[in-house]
Length: 590
Image (cartoon, rainbow, N blue to C red; front, side, top):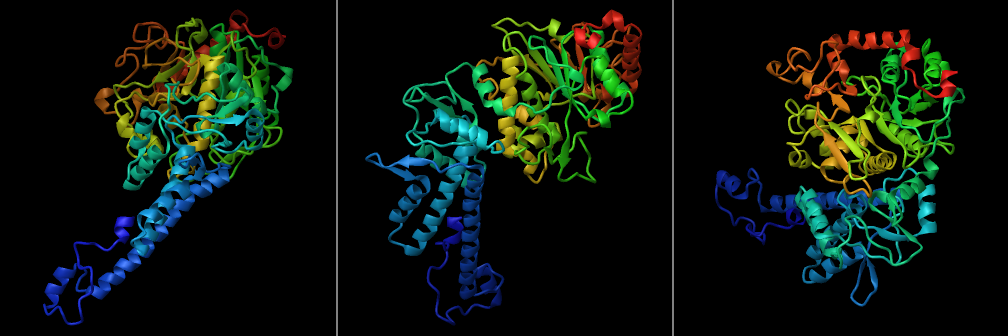
């Protein structure tokens, strides 16, 4: 911006006297480059362009600062020689003024640019998706920030006696994120301001100099030296639901749990999920966010109560519904929960596809950190053939967070317009970085209680910081967040989390088949599940590539004509022989 506002030195630096140019009109047009405009007109354009550039610089500088003020984030401080602290904006603008004293006009421009850099640096410190070191905070202040600012994407980054430090890898990540000249300048300023740590520490963690402090991590996530389970439970104390399961049912804390958001469906659609799961002999909890009983379709309430489903009748209000565009999700966008929280929903309008993670968090806190595992699922397009919890290895040295990929022969991040588009929320260059990665589907995630809770918390933090649903693309999906956090290693960096992903048709837990019949897949690369893909047995069950029956099948509706009669047959078999299959809680059995 500064270069554009400065007169070009390769051109004339002084205005020639009137009549000095005796060339004809064509020569004037060629020399001036402005279609016959003379030197005076050219200088006028330079002046107007400079004013416009300053206006743009001002808007760029103030926008992140306004965001910081809105989110309750204070400015980052740097150190003066001698120990005195100096606000970042003052530090850079002061340096700019001192270096440009010989040219008042140019110095003012440089000061404006320096202030813009400083404001952008402060924004980058608060919202950077790279791993940022923690700022120490007294425990009382941290608790007040958590309780008083539930809707902020960067909560309570405040410190009076702490420093901010980035490792070499963190600095490189900040540089990689810069895709324009201005962003690269901001990233470079950020590197210059933040010294490297004196000793090597776990990425994203900095020890406090006080024993009675906790730490505020990037995006406001609070982490301390205590075990991960305790930290996440402390952060979520105020996030439990004001609702309880309907019909007097209750969570069994030592049970495994399968969770989903499912509302507005018929009895048969509920049965395709619930009955096929109970038919496997699954005896754990089934937890669903549904509509209140009064709005359920005929037969649904009686069915859910009979099957011991822990149903939460939540309500919501939507600010705006999308019209005239292809709806990838059945859940609305721009909604707030009206009865989930005792003190009201303070996080602002957001898609229900994101809101469901708050529901998962409330539910996970009901379970034992040691004994329980859980899976969160998309509801409408999932059915079960085996109990998935009987197949997972829970040993302490095995993965405790499992993600499930779509078929990479027909879909990768790079060749899927939707998944690559969702990743652009973090920068236009990001899809290229992970173009050859498998697409991990956000519609099914399995883990131990603690690992899954850590994952859910991390997703919510990223929702709040990125807010992709507020961009011009109005992204309603959670899958971009899911892939970004996995591909960048952010999930692997969570304390106590050992994350892995399973390719489609491998591992036996969840078989995600939708991409195999995608409408963008060439005809020669798709066909029936039995004759083309050869993953159905003689009884119709879906198979892994090693021949074992998949525990759960996700996105079955992409093969609706092939599978719907088979699934409904499982439902009818369960209804006819329920006494044989049902292993639910005694309360539900009565």
